[in-house]
Image 1 (cartoon, one colour):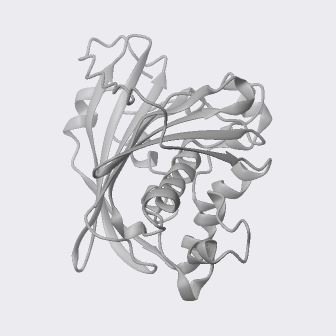
Image 2 (spheres, one colour; image 1 turned 180 degrees about the vertical axis):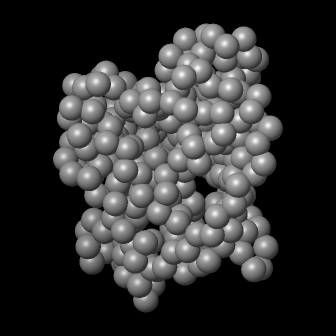
Length: 284
C-alpha cells in the first residue's frame, strides 16, 4: 500500500508515557557491550546499581520500544518491516538521563522524502518529565520500494572527516549473541534474530541492530575522551552506512576537536566496510 506522506505529516502528535529503572539501564548497557572486564571500576558505572550512570543513547530504547516504531505506525504509513532500515539517528540531551524515570514522549512525523527507489520517514520524539525536557530524538527511517510518489527528495548531508590521522583508534568485538541480548531492550525486529526473515530482507543471516553499533560507539567515546562522564554529552548523531554481523569486530577511528569528537566506524573482517558515517558527539 503506497504511503500517504501528506497525511503522515499532517497527523496530530502522539504522546505516550514511558518509564524505566535501573534494570532497564543495566540490560541496555550489557546489550552495547558493557561489563568487560566485569570487575573493572570503569565498567561498574554501567553495570552496578550503586554506581550506575546512563549512556545517553539509552534514549533510543527508553520505555521498551525501538526509536523508529512510532514513525512506522503513523497515520498514512503502512510498510513491510522487511523493507525497513534505519537511515540515521540524532539525540539532543537537555540534561542527563536519570537512572529511574517516568516521562511523556511526544512523537510526530516531520517529513517523508522521496528518494526514487525508497522513501525516508523523518520522525521526531520529544521527551519530558515533571522537571522539563529530557531529550529530543530524531530518526530517519529508510523504506525500500516506497519512493516514486512525487515528493521532495530532501537534504543530503555528508561531512568530510579531518585530513589527518585519527587521534585514537579502538576495536570493539561483537559477540555472536550480541543482537539477541540487545533486542531485549525493546527492538524486536526479527531481522536481528530470525534467519528466514533476514533472508527475506536480503541478508544471508541476521544483522546487528544499527542502534547497537550506535550505543557501542557512544560508550567508546565517553570512555576514551570524556573520562567516563556521560553527563558531558550534549548531542550525538550518525548515519547508518552499512551493516554489521554478530561475531565481527568494529574499528572506531576518532578525531577530537574542541567540543566534539568525530568518528568513523567500519567492520574489520570485511575490509573495513563502512558501518557508521557522519558521526559526531558534541560535548562540554
